Length: 153
Image (cartoon, rainbow, N blue to C red):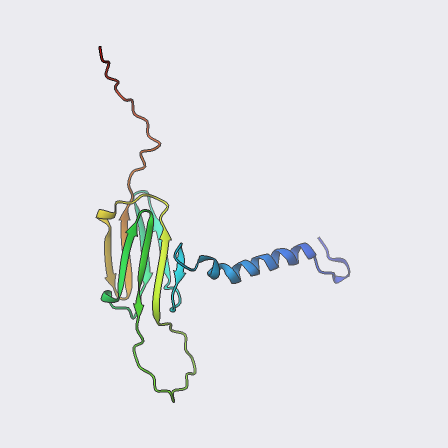
């Protein structure tokens, strides 16, 4: 549809503003204990994907030693938390021209969409990447089975 006289389409502006507002504030919406990330360091990037039998997590932890992070599963929540220490103690006279790396405490909490067998989770750490393979438990709530009824005389 044409825009006579070059006037702004208010509906389009509102939709664009809403999306921009949401994108700007999505970080705030997921910070904290209940899902998302928190801490001094920016969130470490991660991929979470699944197939029929497993949920997989790959999280970049470059510069973090294995002794500086922990992985927990409680109920249906996966938590990865730790500390990325600065590699160098800077002199107060140092002037940065670019400072993109983050340091400090980090915590990621992810709510798992499926029940998993926490006793059989496999975790590996290689080349700064944490890899988790979590087997799903079969959801038996939707399966039907006949119950044999014992008759007492």
